[in-house]
Every structure is written in structure tokens, then in C-alpha cells.
Image (cartoon, rainbow, N blue to C red; front, side, top):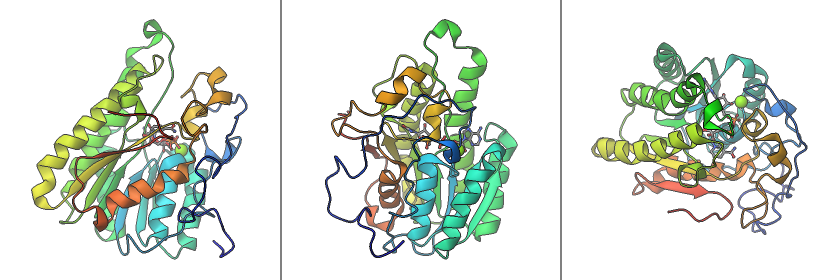
Length: 302
Ligand code: NAD
Ligand code: MG
């Protein structure tokens, strides 16, 4: 990042046009999609995220951190001084290598752990390997997610429902349980939920249900582990331009209008989510527990 950059997250500016209102062309990628092939490209903070030492010396595991929101969080965490273990699917190696190189350019360490979070054993192995590589663990971001749009419940088969629930919420139980066994007081867990938790789209029945469950899990677990000095919170994104949306996450016809109905009038970029995760993971949020921070362009939430 250079001194000339005027689009970093700390520069006073108009949120309406900090990023352009995009009209993505109809496009399709097999699941999971790649940031490398997204059109237009998303901003994950490579040039724009400016660190201020909020996570100095922290050791973080971030799931789904090859692309989209997770990659922006990984880049921000590294700029804030953390070493990062990246979890992603093997098909996403190209995206993961890019994020690794950005992290290393910040002078921080990145460790790559490809694998499938729907596999019970992998959830445990992932945490064990991350702890070993990082030399401990004091920050977990549960961000991996599966979203496949299906218009009619008659076409929503059991396999999809099970895979969505296993990826989005059951793996979150498994990874959190494994991680908590290693986490010292002061550690943090941040879970990615969604505006869909409160305003379910009719074509996202399975996905939206898991996001409501994540909010509830966050509030319950936060109370359970508070006395250990571990804080659990969530971030609820609105419409953010990521590969999830082009790998059947949205009906194709909806892509050109994606995010335009928010009060800000545009989709969010992944890097706009990163400061919320940084805040909830840093000691400055010491009295914030069981909270869901909405980052959604202005859509009202409960
Ligand atoms: P993304 O596709 O870039 O990230 C999702 C990641 O989940 C993938 O990169 C993949 O690595 C991981 N993943 C999926 N299935 C997996 C599995 N079986 N094993 C291991 N990893 C797996 O898209 P994103 O939009 O950045 O999504 C990140 C999170 O944000 C998700 O939880 C999603 O539900 C949530 N979210 C996104 C939006 C949005 O508009 N993009 C809105 C609200 C919530
Ligand atoms: Mg990905």
C-alpha cells in the first residue's frame, strides 16, 4: 500500500460512492466460485486496508478465507499484526495462494489448510494443525458458508438442506468446540451470519435458516464462555460482491441489480466488512459479547 492511496478505510469520504454501484453481468461459476474469475473484480483490501496495530501478535484461524469476505478479513488481520491460518476447499487453491502472498507482503505468516468442513474429522484436524502452525490460537472467525438458491421447496432436496446446515452451522459447532480447547482468556470468536437471518429471501430457505441459527448460537455460546474471558460475536453482512453470489447463490437474473435496493444504493465490497471483524476481535471491544454487528448498507434490522 502506498501513501497516495486515498480510498483506505480511515479516510473521510462519502460512503455512497466510496465504491461504484456495480451492475454485474450475468455469469456462472461452478461451486465454490473463484475471486480470480469474478466480473467485475471485488475489493478485498489489498490496496486499501490500512492497519493500525489492533491485532498485534494475534494468532487467527479464518474459515472460507480464500475469497470474498473471509479473504478481506484475513488481509485486514495481517495488516493489523496477526498471523493467519486459512481454511478453504481444495478447488480454491489459486485464490488461497493470492491471499497468502498478500499476507506475507505485510510481513506476517500465512498457513494454508485446504479441506472440507462438512467432514467431521477435518474440523478437528484443521484446528489442531492451525494451533501447531501458529503456536497457539486466540482468534477464530467462522466464515465459511454455502448458499444455493432454489425457487421452490419442491425442488429443495434433502442433500442440499443437509449440506447447507452441515457447512454453515454444524461445522461451526465442531470448529468452535475444538478451538475453545486451546484458547486463552482474551481470545475471540466471530461468526458470519447474514441479513437473511431476519429477512429471509423466499429462494434461500435452507441458507437463511442456518443464518438465524448462527445468531442464536452466537448469543448462547457468548454467555457460556464469557467467564473464561472469551468473547463470541457475529457479523451480519448485507449484499456483498463475492464468488458466493455467482455460484448459484442468486438467481442469474438478479445479478445486475445485486445490492442496488439498499439505502446506500450499491452492493458492499468485501473489504468494507473487515473493520467489523477487526473491532470484534480486538481488545477494544472488551465489553461487547453476544452481539451481531450489521454491515449491510442500511437495511433495518431487529
Ligand atoms: P465466498 O464464496 O468467497 O466464501 C465462502 C467460502 O466458504 C468459500 O470461499 C469456501 O472456502 C468456504 N466453504 C464453503 N463450503 C465449504 C466446505 N464444505 N468446506 C470448507 N470451506 C467451505 O463468499 P462470501 O460471500 O465471502 O461468504 C462468506 C460468508 O459470508 C458466508 O458465511 C456467507 O454466508 C456470508 N454472507 C455473505 C453475503 C454476501 O452477500 N456475499 C451476505 C451475508 C452473509
Ligand atoms: Mg472461495
